[in-house]
View 1 (cartoon, one colour):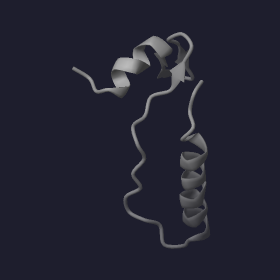
View 2 (tube, helix red, strand yellow):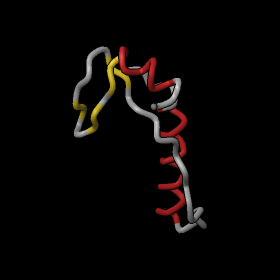
View 3 (cartoon, helix red, strand yellow):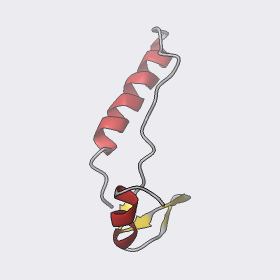
View 4 (tube, helix red, strand yellow):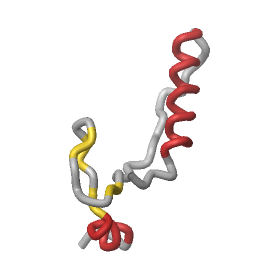
Length: 64
């Protein structure tokens, strides 16, 4: 799976969770990008549909 954004999103999620658990002020809206997971072949990973490498090229240039 190609997902260079995962560490950033994971770090953001953990920080928000820790703030919520400790009772600190938590942002009302946390926005994360809607980026697909890319795998060599299209598959379902824990209920999330991935896109294949071949599907990524047209996706990256915008959907028609």
